[in-house]
Amino acid sequence: MLNAYSTYDINSYKSQINQENLLDEDSFLCVDEEEVMQQANNHVQEIAAADCHQPPERYIRQEHKEYGNFTTNGREFSPAEIPVIDVSLLPSSPSELHNLKSAVTTWGCFQAINYGIESSFLEKVREIGKLFFGLPADEKKKYLREADDVDGYGNDMVLSDDQILDWNDRLYLTIVPKHQRKIQFWPQNPTHFREVLDEFSSKVELIFEAVLKALARSLNLDEDCFLNQYATSEKIGARYNYYPPCPRPEKVLGVKPHADSSAITLLLQDEEVEGLQVLKDDQWFGVPIVPDALTINVGDQIEIMSNGIFKSPVHRVVVDSEKERMTLAVFCPVQSNQVIGPVEGLITDETPRLYKNVTYSLDFFLKIFQQGRRPIDACKI
Image (tube, rainbow, N blue to C red; front, side, top):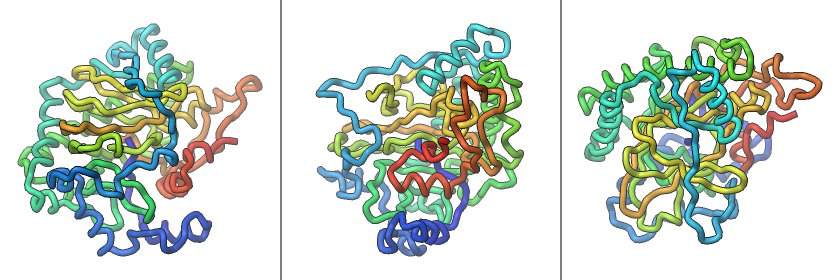
């Protein structure tokens, strides 16, 4: 689930990268609005609808360059035995708290149930996404993201001319705090889109707080120690992901291998079509669909704060040859505006500090990501 982040100036970032000799001047495609919008118009949904028999070259994987380039030796991907955690029990059940800690130290993720959202409401959340992506192209393009932003409708943000693009379209929206929402990108069609997403946003905030407190308690820390590293203005972003069928699914990826920069990411999976995979012990595992569950993974920020106890999992998305897939990912928060670092109570002679104090911002993340490395590795001492 590769994060979309808060607003930034791509020309400023381009200049920064060039100064550090990470990429040549000519390697950037999106250096002006016209070129950015030209890329934005090449939506994957439209490419798939054209009934092409081979994906365009820009989407063809270069497996030897991918992080986690491990084969299955001809075998099917094994299903991941992701633990199911009852969120309602976390405040009162030591055994469920232990299960949470075990899940996040082992897999970096868990399947959350009983987290305070009715299944009937989840149907509404899915429905508005499906209705949006089912609109005519001209209607969806009313919400195209701007050249220097991530909010809005689009697909992969193109930063270099050798970048392999993800086989998906997305609608990214800042949902928290409310005063930083860019409401012009919130669709008015379907008519109940804004109302449903607004209600969902309020519920997500409660889940984010409950999970972070539980993670802290599982380490015998003050329950607010992770939350206290964030400012009240931290942004939470929601991203609808639409993965059209691809005639050669083995040639593309819905999302390239990565780990999230967020503290935690909540994923509302498609009801029927699987696609999320996590990397564990040099092997890719398929994440199964659990009805009404939210798949929650920790991100790099929590790995840093926990001094490496909790693992930010590398994951990717594969696509289907016949079936479309739609998910909703929520990044809590998308980046850190504050300096974050390992909690002091976790640093001892036996468990020395593993990470520096850092500001885990978009510029930092992209700078390292464009080098083909995991950004969190640059934070290690």
